[in-house]
Image 1 (spheres, helix red, strand yellow):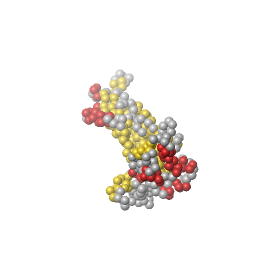
Image 2 (spheres, rainbow, N blue to C red; image 1 turned 180 degrees about the vertical axis):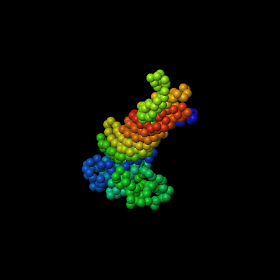
Image 3 (cartoon, rainbow, N blue to C red; image 1 turned 135 degrees about the horizontal axis):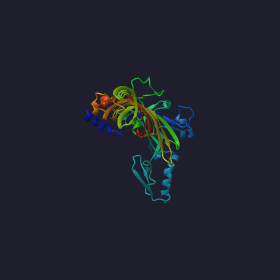
Image 4 (cartoon, one colour; image 1 turned 60 degrees about the vertical axis):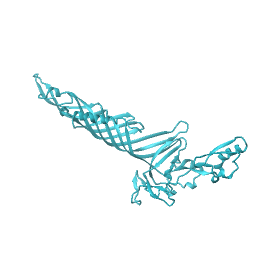
Amino acid sequence: MRNLYFILLSLFSLYSFGQETFYKNYKIRNFIDFLDDGKNTYDYANLTKDQKSKVKFLSREKCFIYNSLNSSQKATIDKKLQLVKDGVLIEVKLNDCSGNEIIINKSNIDKPEIYKLIGQTLTVRAKTFGSNKHNNDVYKAGLLMEKNKLYVNLWPFKENTASNEQGDSGITKNVSDNETNPKKIDNINFKEDKNLNVNKETRVPLFYEIPDDHTAIFRFTELSVNAITIPIKYRFRTTRDALVTNQNNVVEEVKVKSEEFSTSFNVALFGGYSWGKTKFTHRKKIGNRVKTHKNTIGVFLGSSVVELNSSNTNITLNQPQSDREGTIGTLSFGVGWVKSWNKISLGLFYGVDKGVGRVSENWIYNGSGWFGFGLGYDLFKL
């Protein structure tokens, strides 16, 4: 039995710095509203220039050929071409919409075919969510911030082997059979939409553009498995057998009350359900900042070692002396709650330790409940 304990202890130790997160999803909408005007829907086509700087719809990048651009969009390219025409530069290098390099010089700058090849990538509104009437619908997604873009990975999607009218394989979203009764999540309507990917835009990166020094806040839920330690345990008061010397100088057995705060080596796997929110702040000059606050409730299973002594064992007159002290292994299990602020975590746990081996029978806290407390840096890796 002792060998089994050490095997379990070694297995748990392998995970002492690990974490796995499953099914983490953020709740997103068609746009991020930085206007703080109380509105929850907008007509994208009628937004003013100022509103477009503060109401950021889900976007994507799309390449347009030169001839399809308007005059303001052509301006950057025209400046480069004019340098060649004026003889300031011998050539300029541009790209087509496939990423191929096009070298333009005086020998080809006047050829109309060249302007059918030149491409320019622009940010356009993604049509993934459909028309404006869907602005307030909520969807699941993963989020990743790079520079001023908050990238969105909508899910759950699966490849569809069927083909559309153009012969291209699409991507469809897993949906419930009853679309007239949307799920309720965080007191908001959560919409499962079979037509979510009608334009197949989930195959290209989708993103929100975050203005400088602005913060976007998103709530999320996730399932996770973490390696934790519980360094401090309070064991409840219980009764134990002890030996005392009475007034007649005779040793006798008595019942005494014992309780303790204990610290011991322990490691456990903690799995549970988390909910919280993440703040994504774009800071152009000094780098982006991402802050996550979350709560986790779950169960744990682990192991620890306990040193036996006269204050936590039953000591009787007929007990062999060799059984009065030593070290035993325990299996620990219970429930817990963890509050995390970025890499700082505070945990409260309730559990039971079950001793392993014959000597553990004299341990007075064997199978009894305890409260545990943990405070650490990077307890959960966020």
